[in-house]
Each structure stands twice: as structure tokens, then as C-alpha cells.
Length: 380
Image (cartoon, rainbow, N blue to C red; front, side, top):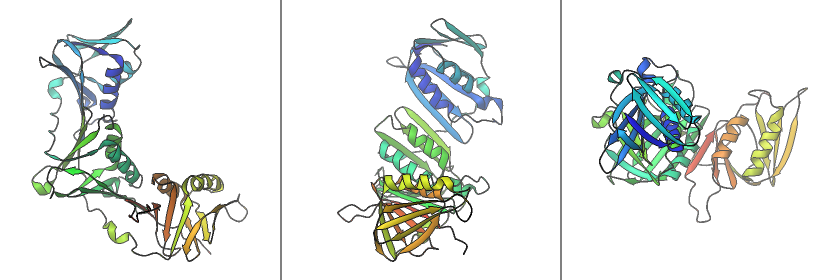
């Protein structure tokens, strides 16, 4: 194998592929990155791949190839080397069981791994539909924030993806909050109906990294339709697949209240800054107390002989006055996720979940993002 490519092009491709490399691979070859230089006549391409039996990543870039070939090298080491090369043309060539990476006056020699032992990457399932890449990345980031991080409850570490025709609904919960987002996409089959539970971290990383192209293609294969339970994403020359999670996701729709006794609206930026300031005195897991009444919101933290903080903001309130307390981190996650300049908080009682959305548009349409948050019970 021998090829040449600009440092920045190679560095970006290697770094993206290396994201999914396992920290503690079950077998040594899974720490490797597969480099496949193919001369297709009209086009010379380098394909970089990684796979750990759960998540695969693959990207193709244009290179100048002198000798096609296929090698496996340590992905983390290659990423470190390429990232630190000078901004010049990089030449990569094989020398027996070694790979030589040259750039300017820098020259690195690294050992190859046995390419014949590397597992075959999974094929992409059949295309299910496509969505605008920026819209998809924004929607996933809004929902992934509420996913659980406790691996003993794997079904809560995922994002539930529900597909019904031209609507995709994303939902996640860690039992203390719930995030739901709906978005429109273009399905291959207008009558498609499918459900998948996708690892939240993989989905968030993938959505964020596929904004280089205008569209993201989504390919879903579930056990229900004879597949292996896999979802694939492709866009901007990059492709990722991941196995789906098993387990029963909570029936989240019944958690969303249908009516409210109080609705408050607060300027989001001011609210976020006030929450950050008042929370400075709150000990770990100490709740932030909010009191809404006509025309104002009072935020408080700290009690008794501890440090205390109080701040007051303007707020519009319809309905009953209410006093309620939240985990400040969870509250900030919800406020930061809404896209409107005005945060809309909907309450039933001080002991039941509240729903945070952006302010509804003037045409009366319902917000496509809802963030439900459990209150913290205050001791009397």
C-alpha cells in the first residue's frame, strides 16, 4: 500500500473513525483501524473503518494511490500521530509488517495488526428514510440529555425512536426527567411504522458528526422485520451502524399531563443565568426552590445556617400561584434544550411533574419539544 493525502483531510477522517474505538477491547484487533486504499479507476479512495461488534464507523476520502492495499493499525496511535503532523502532504506506505507515515521531515514507523483477524463490518440495513442533518442533530441533542447513564438499567440509557409515516418521535428518560421531540422526515415508504431503542451516547455523537452533509440517511433493521436489531446512519461520506438495545422502554406518553393548573412564562436567558447564580450556594443534590405568583418568580437556595441565595425575575403567570423545587442541573438541562427565547413552564401541583417547553408560536401550534421534570419534595 502507498498513498498520499493532505494532513487535514486525513486527520479529520482518522479522528472521526477513532471515536468509536473501544477503550478496553475484548480482543487486540478491535483496537485497530482498517485502512483500505482502493483504485476505482476514475476515483481513488481511502476507506477508514472501526468496529467493536456493537458500533461500526466508516468514512471515505479522496487520496492519490500508488499501490492499493489493506492494512490494520492501532487506531488511537494513528490518530495521535496524524493529529500532530505538520500541515503538509502525508505519505503512508507499507514496509513488510510495518507502516511508514511521512510528512515533511517527520517520519513514523508503526506495526501492523493481523488484518485477517479483523471482523467483517456489518452491512447497512435497507434505507428507511432521510432527514435534514442539522434538524436531526438538534433534535437528538434535545432528547439525549435526559437519557440515563446507569448501565444496570440499559433500557434507560437509550433513545426510543418511533417512526410513523413522515413523523419521527424521539424520547428518553432517566426516571427523574423525560424529554420528547417530534420532527418531520422523508420516509422511503409513506406507511412505514417502526420502533427502535438506540444507545443515547452513540446516537448523540453520530448525529453531531453527520452535519457535514445536507441529509442524513437512516436505515433501520429490527427483529420484528427479520433483521438483527440494528440502525445505520449515513451522511457527508460517513457511515455508522449500531446494535439496538433490548428491554422495555417505559410507557412515557401516560406520564405527560393533559391539563395544568398554572402556566408561567419567563425569559429563557435571564432564567438560566439566575438559576446558575442561585445554585452556587446549593449543596450537592440540594433543591432549587421556585415561587411563582402574579408578575414575578423568586428563586431560592440554601436553608438555615447554610449559605443562602435569593433572586427575583419577571414572569407571566396564568392560573394558581405555585411553589415548587427542582434539581438545578436537571432544570438547566431542560431550559438549555428549548429553542425559544421564552421558557414556558406548566404545572399541576407542587408534587407532580412539570413540563417545560418553548413558548408556543402565534399560530397556536403546540411545541414539538417537551421536557418533563420531577419536582423535589421539600421537608416541612
